[in-house]
Image (tube, rainbow, N blue to C red; front, side, top):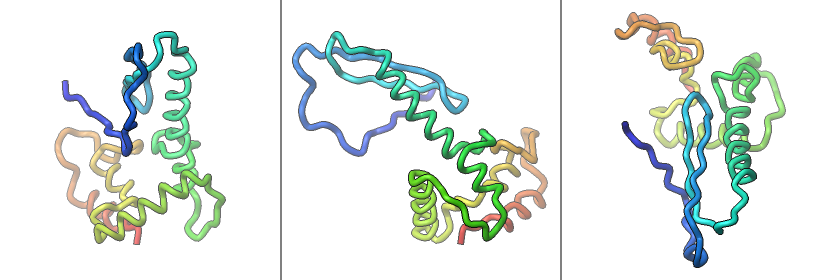
Amino acid sequence: MARRVAIPLAIATTPPPLGAVVHDFDGRTMGTTWHARLAGARGLERVPVAQGIQACLDEVVAAMSTWERESDLCRFNRAPAGHCALLPAPFAEVMARALEVAETTGGAFDPAAGALVDAWGFGPRPVHRARSPPRATSPRRASAAAGAG
């Protein structure tokens, strides 16, 4: 089984206190599982830590899930073109960064490629479900609809 590792942007420069032990936490989110390890005191209250991690992941789902109909992203995507909507600050920040990356990569990264993802069978509304590639017209139509710029 392949393992994925998320490397933090910053790592503490001070070592854990003497007597610290490694605590393992895990749970479920986004159709998969998560696992976290941290060094802490032997008497660490584990339940609040696990609940805190899960709450952070639940916030990401509530904001950015393409599978949860009431997520901020799904509501944003359902809004008519030209509609002005108030967005939570973290959601607006993700959108701003996505548009920045799209511009920096000359469109190689396209945050508006949801229809194309669906055409290949990977999104919440897959157009194509077979194990072979979709008909050529489906991705072409989806590509024409994509484009953040």
